[in-house]
Image (cartoon, rainbow, N blue to C red; front, side):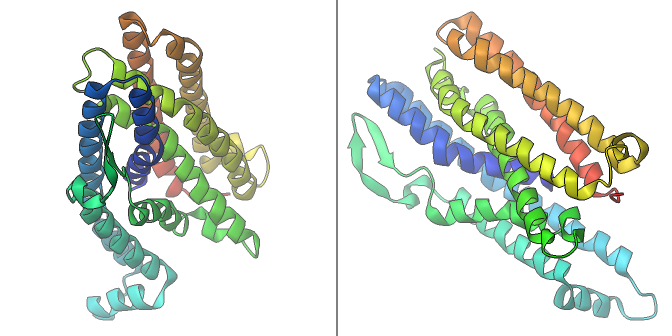
Length: 305
């Protein structure tokens, strides 16, 4: 569930920031052909997000099965356990909300792009339609909150729980903004971009957003570590801490690859060799991030100290 939500957040970040910023840059340079390719890429990104939401619905349903198995009372009917879990527990209400949101995201993202409406015709050969609607943006922003409401953050006592939940949701939002949107650029953005113009426009739009996302990711991670660890020694003495330490090391590797792309890759985007190099490093960056997400899933199921 975590990885899928991060990808959907990446879709939202692409449509909110990367697509419109790249369109402005291409329009300024008078590259109408690349603008048409960008609009085709936007349609693919939307479909990818919608299909990811559909796939997550099966994971969402499996979540109820796992929860019922852990909650099951063999002396009462199964239906009674299910209805009690859904109607009388906080987890059940969050689970229902998450399912409704995933269904709405899938419907909205899989609808034809023309249904988004228009801000008026075409500008220098570029469609002026919106990349993302307010409803889509709101739902995508809220999805990480449903993850946080079912995470270790809910075990933080007292008034600090609100801070922990907010930090957890912001952590997921930042991760999706950084790594989810980068994965989309690699998977979708350059599919028909023979000259690399579209790839370069997207990466330049992505870079400042990624810097802000990384800053938020690190700061929220520190806050969550303070809440979930009793002392620094937990990082090597407790199962939760050891998994967290491995995750931090891999995040460091991912950040290093991102730093190389920022310092060396962006200036070289004008050459074919530079584009090949930045794609290769970005591919390794996303691969390392995939391992981080796997460790995050393991961490979610590991009791904190």
